[in-house]
Structure formats: C-alpha cells, structure tokens
Image (cartoon, rainbow, N blue to C red; front, side, top):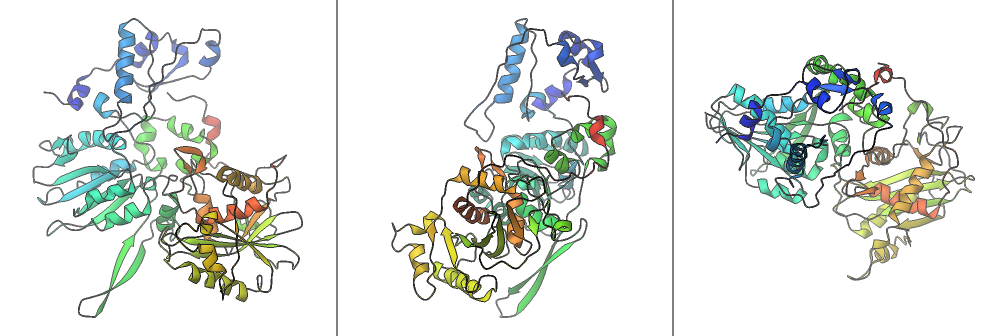
Length: 556
C-alpha cells in the first residue's frame, strides 16, 4: 500500500494558467511566478464588483484531538465533491495540516529556521543509540515538520522508515528521531524518565518556561560518544515571548555566547562549579536568498503587513509583534528627560502634595508584585518604585509568606526618601481578603508590627485593561497619562511582552508573567480616566528598505 506522501508525489500538477482559466480569470489579472504559482492583481476586485456574490462555506470544529479534527480533509473532500457536481469551486485553507492530504507543504517563511532544525537532528544518526526529539506545541502543528522530514530524511537516508503511529523516524543504524508535542504544561510528564541526546523546539515562544526548563532535564546522553545539546527556532510573539526575550535576546548582542555558572555541592561535601552556555543567532528573509529568488514578491508582502507584524517578521524586532496587547508602549531613552513620546522617563523628586498609591498582587510560588504610584495635578500617574518578589528565573516566586512580604514592603517605605513619612493608599487583589480557609492574607499583613493596610481593588478585568490603553495614548504634545521611572526594570520588562489570550481575545493571557500588570490595574481603577478624545501617534522610524511602495498585490 502506497503512503500518503507517495500518492501526493505522483500527482501531476496543472499549469496555473489552466487553473485560472477554469475559474474565469483572464491573463491580465494573473501575475505568474513560474509554471505552477501566481498572484492575482488586486485591481480584479473592481472588475468583479458587478458580479453576483458566490456562496461561502465555512468548515470549523470545536474539540481538538492529537491527530486534529479533520477540518482540512473535510474541506478538500467538500471542494472535490462540489467540483464533481459541476460547481465552480475555490478552496482556501488557513494554516492547514497538509500532511494527510497533499503530502508536502512547501517552503518556510523567512530564514529557513525550521528546515535547519530538522537537518540539525540528523548530525548523529550514524550512532546506533542516538535519540533526538523535535517538539511543537500541539501535534497538528507538527504536520509541516513531518512533511518536510519526509522529503529531507528520505533523500539523505533512503533506508530510513517513518512510523506514523508513534511519530518516529527509524534509521539504518538504529538511531531514532521522535516528533512530539506539549499542548499543556502537564504534558511534560509524558517525557518523564526519557533521555534525548538532542532536543529541538520549533517556535519556542509558543512554550512556557516551565515546559522548556523541564525538558533540559531530559537532555542527557543515551550512551557513550554522543553530543548532548538543545536547539530552538522562533519568531517574536506568543505566550513565551517574554521569557525567551529575557533569556536569549536581552543579555547579549546576537552571536555572543551567554555563559551561566552554577555551583553544585557533591556528596563528599566539596563544591564544583559548572557552566552552561547559550547563544542567539538571528535569522531573517535576507539570510535566505533561495526563497527570495523563488518568490521575489515575498519581501514586498512582508513589508505590506501591519506595522507590528512587519517589525517582527521582516526586521526581527522583539519590541513589536503580533498579539502584543499594549502596542502603544514606547521606551525611548532619548526622551527620558523631556518626557515626550515615551512611557519610560528619568526619576524626579515627587512633590509633597502629590498622592501616593501602593498596588499589590500576592504571590508565593509565582512572584508577588508591589508598585508605588504618584499622581500629579492633572491626574497623570507615575510608577516611581517597585518591589518584585522573583528568583530571577522566569515567573518564579520567592516562596515567602505574607508576613515576610509585609515586612519588606514596610522596610521599603521607611527607607526610600520618596516614600518615607508619606501617607500611602494601598489597594490589592480582592483575593487576599478571603477568610474561607482561616485568617486572610490582608489580616496577616495588617497585624503588628507592620500595620500594612489594604483596600480591595476593582478586579473588573476588561475595564482595567481599557484604563491601561487610555493612559498609554499620547496627546498632541507627546505626553501620555501614565509614565514609569526607568528604575522600574521589571515593569519595563514584562508589560510590553503581554499577549492576548487566544480563547478570550479581549483579555490578556494569564499564563504569562502578569503580576505587575494586575497590581497596576488595581491602582488605575482607583484613578479612572475617560477615553481620550484625540490621540497622537509617535513618530515612526523610517523604513530603510522603502518596501511598502512595492507592496502592490494581494498574495493567494
């Protein structure tokens, strides 16, 4: 019995001109790219304005399975059936799982990172006990990688066999390359007790830190003579954008190794210092001349994307990306002093008559967050100080009790000249007032000797998020209603990295490091403002490639 990929490879492609003719498209509306691919001139939309609209059929599903729901297969079958009935039918697939139907989904966007990851896994397949693992967040997302492996691996090792049931490549030497997924953090236990000489993550920002760090423990030798290491590919954006940026992007310039040193106490009482290094290697479409030669219009297509997507996917910016919640955010050191067109500013002396607020979000295994805010005569808020209870590892708390947290907060207010002797209004997560399991956290913190008083914050999530948006907007003079001292490093690190929740598209994804966002939101809700009547956009940087002028056609 022939495999799906064999059937797909035996198919004979029709020239794109014949396909266009069957749809009633004339030659003037077609912009060919080779024999089997073309774009459609956007001016065709005007030509078809008088034509009667066709019927649109949407194929969707609710409950995903490890193998997918079958939307792609159903859509293809439906289109074939409609054509068989004599209907003029066009099928449009968004990020389809092409493996079961077409065999190979060709090409990779940008620098070819995913292709490189697949090839990297082959380095040690000549060693019989070698084991490799390539991961995507969900199994349906793996289909593209599996399809590409069918092409690459069979060419390099004709005797290699792929088991579609277990998702593993078996090589003549006995080596194996597994394809896996980790849709939920709890799925990491599926890899408990296993060892892999090589682990590759495709689209690392789709993973949480807990998932990535756990797999480090599975990255160990399966036998003598293997090199043990990990690789990952990614684009900006996604649930893991913040921790990936903090781990790989921020610490050092691209191409510069980042070396971590760890001290381990051995059973005999001695200590040994160990090192582990990592490095970020940038990749973009400009590193892939083959793609540019094959599809000359792809560069212009990237340039025509919305600004956030263009900055991320074309220029590789980690400060602007798809899914970012607070796209208004600007951090411009050139304006720290004049406070224009930036949300981050240089510290200044707080007048005595300005009110001071203290926001608080409790955390134990996750970080706790305290922020102090000053309010000027115009109602503008300034975040002037912060206390963030984290270990230094992504989204990991100090595990200290409420009384100790209260002590540290009070100590900060007694020692900081900006806060010492001031009346401070405290607002906190309403959850700390819960008495269902005994004394509340709020009551513990209010006891002697710290006497830390809180009032419950307004936990209305969407209204709080909108207050963020209102305050981050710039007026005509380049002044927002909310600014942050450049000493508040954790706020500056976490807030720009927040992304939307895919299942609740109006709210942020709470799996992120959102503790600072929460405590700030409580303070904003105590000082609400109306939506600004007029907003001004900060000056945009020049497009060094001037590519937007070339983005003339719609891609199909």
